[in-house]
Image (cartoon, rainbow, N blue to C red):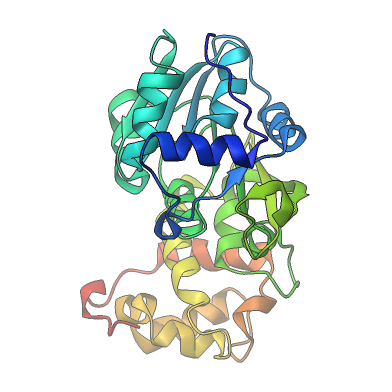
Length: 301
């Protein structure tokens, strides 16, 4: 690979951006990871092999991209910033035969690519803080599941993803993440490892696909519906949350009461107290209840 660049140097990054007539955009949450050891650890956690089909979201100017290409992967990168795309194409990796760049909003282009070209073996990204949670949640609810994913996100987001039953961070995001993946925090990255430094600590989260999903396929629609609705208002009881959600619109008051009764769950409990076994029971029983009215009649939250 002919492209060499001192990615650890803020001065070099600033000079490159100035040469290209670019400026860092707060709108896109641009922070460059200038710690070589952190970048290497991320690639190590991704556990790639030569020839692996790997996708990277938000490559920026290619710091992690370069390490991945050095390991011989077939890499597709998704980048929104036009200026960064120009650098990646014309200065960095344009001559790399195993590098493909898809320009545009990853919230659109990534999912189009999944439909059209299939699921990669590995997926990674130093995700912009403004879209990180949204993108990960959409991936988790989709039908395409890479075997392993490694994302850099805000520490508080990572803690929600990895939270266990009964913890203060246990949430709908925890349930979505852990339905099909074993998840864990690989390591934290301090603000000083980025240029410019963000105001928050970041964490690298590892998703490893489970051999067997926690969710039976027949209950998956009900599970997603419950997860989206149960944690809508954490201060409300399970019963009130369900009654005011699409679940209540679908099965009615008697259906909600019957659902909680069949699942052996006290209606006055809060959603964050639910255990995995109880979520699975609710999903299974909801799947078996015929709709009494259209879900479209729900009053939106």
